Image (cartoon, rainbow, N blue to C red; front, side, top):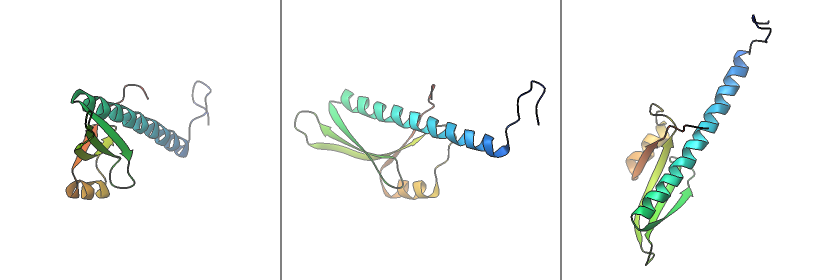
Length: 111
């Protein structure tokens, strides 16, 4: 079926697939911004941030060490959300209670 301009309408499955691809791109952009922000924030305190991707329950583990002596100063988990209204999953809520978790909400301008 064509619309008034001669273009074909997208099926519900196609629209859903495109929305999913857009959400993935937006989430990746938000993670990149959050990692860069955590690194710069640690540098401003005179520390080096070692950021590792975790498996389940949170996105990253951030370990800050002293720049001069290399002593560990602070460790926390970072969960990145690409919207101010994106909810935490059940597993993320559960791990947030057990560990020191910082939820970072980023609205990427370009993704």
